[in-house]
Length: 268
Image (cartoon, rainbow, N blue to C red):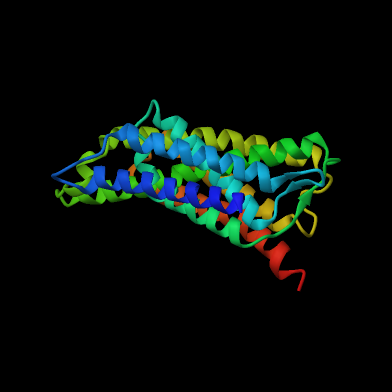
């Protein structure tokens, strides 16, 4: 009962914060909420989200990283990075998409119980690999949403109709700088995750890991190629957006596509 109540309140907090961001972006007159109000309510939701994860994932049998629990843990990491970054950088607009997605993950976690334990005896290199992978995926998720906003902003500016919420976004150059900051940090973490996997795991190309490994390496090549293109050729705009979203799609299939196949499809 307590778990359901906390999940409900956390979900409402995330949706309320997203609604406040939407009002600030789209509303032209009347009451326009302060930026910090949405961030504060988001932190309340994040606090409750933290308790839910502690209650459902951590146990004496090990870490329960079933699909829906892993989804909720990933969304927690993404929202935590988003809210902390919003204290110093203009990235809170990403919450318009990410906060409802996190709310959905809580609804799924609360209603669909699944079990896939990482036992307490798991080696510390494996735990480090999982942590690095989670952080890399979360940062690159932020980058992909930033790329979507950048695409909308670029499209409006090309048509010379920068109306609506586009006017509330930071300048295009700032948006691009934030995008490449996120990609650079995510690329470093993804590199460390892959290196830790190859160094410490027995066989990264085992049957149950080969798809995840290949797709993760392909995503690493895409993001690495984008950063090289940015440094050498000044890539920006649509080129950066396409490469970012392409790499992100590969990561989705690497992390969650593989997990869906292993947990729900192969056992049948």
